[in-house]
Length: 143
Image (cartoon, rainbow, N blue to C red; front, side):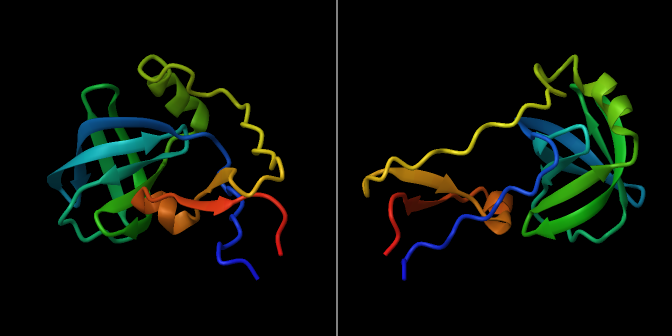
């Protein structure tokens, strides 16, 4: 039995782009300052400490692209996932000018283990991804 947990498969349908942009969240008529941590044509991960998120409608406003509306799909601590209401094609038209490469569909190939114990392969579970944490596991034969 290995001490290191098995890596979880990435369940994301599209690639996320790390941006770290200041923005404003409009929730129930009130404005809250936030940071857009990453985004895709389907949604964005925002950080706004002190906000109690609920599954409701919100609008994110940024100097880079303007405004996009959506619904919160998950929340952990000060981070939350906002799924955009607009179709992916419409969001791409808004975001492509400010996020180079957005909309490309290729996925990176998984790392191949070389069989040496010293090799490390990165693995991030959903909670670790949401908190920005990374776990590592030794690659090679399992005992």
